[in-house]
Image 1 (cartoon, rainbow, N blue to C red):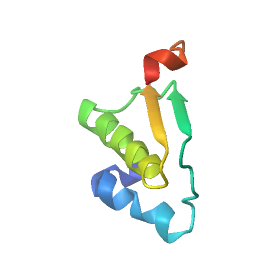
Image 2 (image 1 turned 90 degrees about the horizontal axis):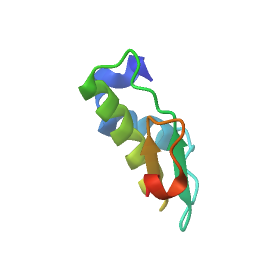
Image 3 (image 1 turned 30 degrees about the vertical axis):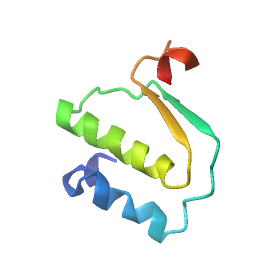
Length: 77
């Protein structure tokens, strides 16, 4: 992922779409926990977060995203 950061989240999200890696997820909630910002600048961490938001929103899923490894699902909604 770090190699793609310079592209920005919009361009990054084109790659999985082009490779057929986007599947229907309408009605699903995806919980991404432990998304560590370690080694990333604040803007890079936000770009990665934006990528995952876009990636899962396109096929209809909602995303709960947290750097906290101990977060519970209600905290991520």
